[in-house]
Length: 131
Ligand code: CO
Image (cartoon, rainbow, N blue to C red; front, side, top):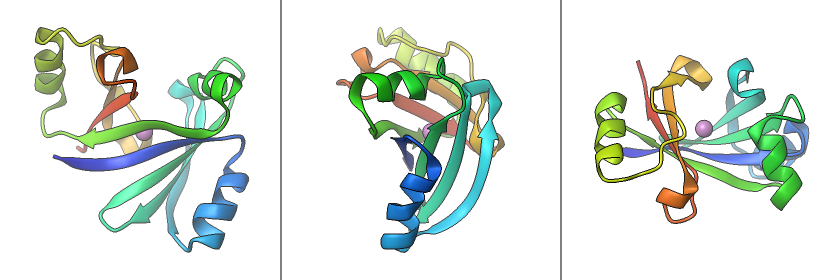
């Protein structure tokens, strides 16, 4: 396993890109809308992992609610797993509170599932399986 990406909530992608791309010099791998999660996403490569900038597309998106409560900042950490269904079953059997009982399609066409921060030391945890 490895850290697939770190998700950062921004008020808008341009504000995030001004820092991570323009000032720091990271390259943008791609930008896309993940309509199911009501976000626009920019993936920037850092070695073999990524920074994922997130911009809410609607006031009821989880990212919009996060920013309303806490302001922009680290939103989640994503771990790459080989078998997301097995990982979810394992977490559930250990009593973890799953936001997604079954994987859904996330950025880049990956399978993703979120684990509630109350089960991961206050960190919103995303599992990612690349197909
Ligand atoms: Co993510």
